[in-house]
Length: 131
Figure 1 (cartoon, rainbow, N blue to C red):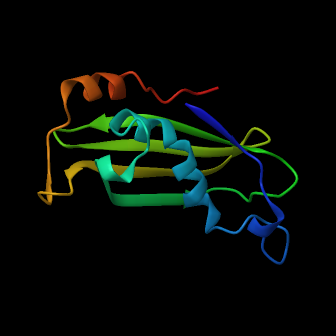
Figure 2 (tube, helix red, strand yellow):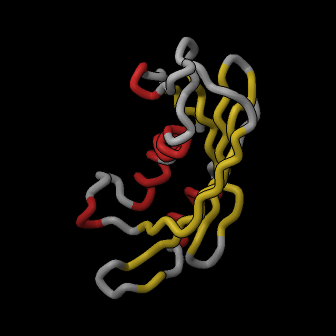
Figure 3 (cartoon, rainbow, N blue to C red):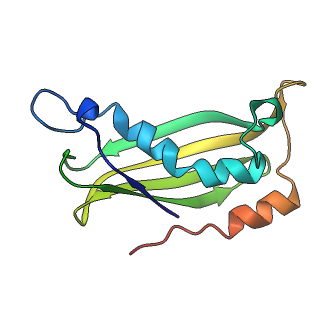
């Protein structure tokens, strides 16, 4: 999956780079369609996902002048959790990579639940694609 981001002036630091705090926010934007698999209307009354781990590796600097591409795919699916692989590219340069682990979670009962087969099948179709 690919998501395009247009950097904003407010996301830059004092020397014209994109501030590192925005990279995880951009990664989250790339997960939106994955969120819809669990909650099609993105309704928090029916929300099923709990974020349990995020890692970010900053590889190269990001700048205001060029758009950014977020690449997102499923790396691993467990019984109740799954791992998302993410990369941010700008002008054909890898600038950041990361992972996010989510658990299929029942907030009413406060416990994880197995990922239903219908959802699992959809997740399995989301490969991480190289350009």
